[in-house]
Image (cartoon, rainbow, N blue to C red; front, side, top):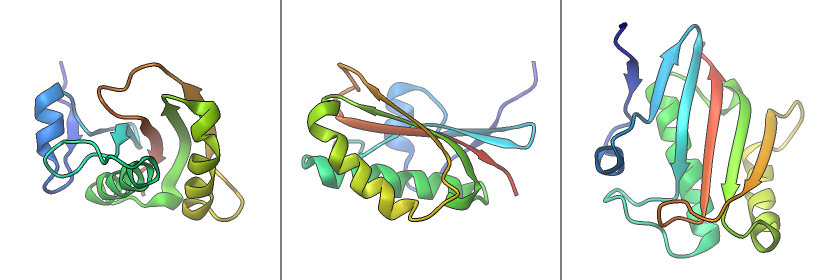
Length: 129
């Protein structure tokens, strides 16, 4: 088996080690980023929902940067929310700040009932430069 080409953003190992997964893996010209949540450096969730969404995007940016990518390299986005009907407008407002103009990446938004103690998660696929 080929060893995975794993990307770790600096200072973010606590959550990955706790749940035993890789934050991102390079493969065939793409970067597959695991779900990023609004966790603090110690792995605990940000308590305010909007702050949690913003921190999830910040954590996503750090993971992309560690691989030499940026937000413009994202081609596919999947978001997960624990109460989408109540949370959707907040997610959309933050997402619109992150991706302010077309062309936008693909986006799939899902409602789920559990996110390991978090209320929002974002995963992406980016094209490596």
